[in-house]
Length: 81
Length: 385
Image 1: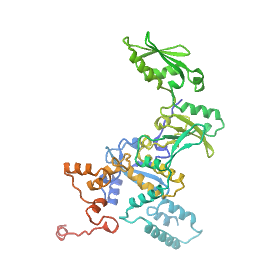
Image 2: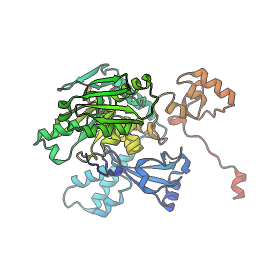
Image 3: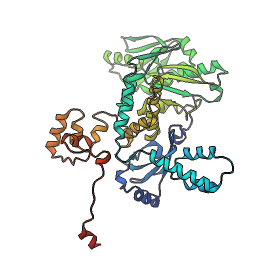
Image 4: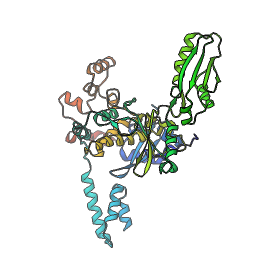
């Protein structure tokens, strides 16, 4: 059987992941009055962010499809544990 | 008109805005629209969960109460091949505990066009057989050891091999790949294996004989049964056994809709966010199939809790409970003595920040009206600024 190349971000279960810039990150932390340590985490090795080239403590913005709100936005900080 | 609505884009969820757009009467004046939007925004604000509301408690009750009415059985899947499906309470427990080994791992493989339409049923059957794991023992009739020179003879079942497109060469390649230090000779109806090392003893030959029985010669490891079924207007292949990473590589399948019920595999292959979505889907599927009615929001909360740390954590003493910062809260769940002794050994401090520990020491809990506390700016500090 031949093989096809599989892209994780195209799968129906995977929502859109994008990396926040430094300024957006500062704005986000200011808006919710939190430190980046307190955000939910995503592993650096997570297959959904492999192509984003994310470094430690970067914030990943996740745009989920939600059955209740249509679309909801979630943030996770890149962590190594 | 549209800029009045777009003003509310970050205040209201997209779904509500869509609904407003679809239901507005034609030619509504800007002033009236503004009033409508304000009223909706106010309504939405009051409908939100209040700060300090114990949502976890409500979620636990809302899932737990209908849970008492769920079945305790494992059902058999109607079809040609007998396949088991875990449903009801056992399945819910399995998901929430975050178990790695499932009772009945299953996959739903969606197919690309020529196969999905089901026009060529023969090809579909053929594809399904290609996916199923075939071990050496499935295509052979006899394994024997020649004691004189310690060769292992494998008699092949040619009919079965033909059915799934196997040739002697392919079988030999598969064996050589997974077995080191052996030479294989092709005798048409059988294969002869001989160890390369001279000092082979009978024990080794016997062990190898048992080992090669389980060598995968074709298909995908872990898929023990395949069953093509019609779902709505396309054909999908349902499998018993699961191996997402390998199945997604196949060219004939629609990889972007193919899923498994093993959430750990999803986490590994597709990431933590996909795992969260999959937890919600799986739990909701069970609850729906039992004819019960639980709001998705409760399930979402549970799924979020299991996924905050970036890896999947079950709701057990090894999972989310072990993440709690308070000793007393951990001790109140399971194995209290272990937690209290360990905490005493390392001199852990409990700041009484959460609910259970405050209940234990008979203090008001930080929930609802117990949450806000008084903050006073000290006059001295204010002066310094």
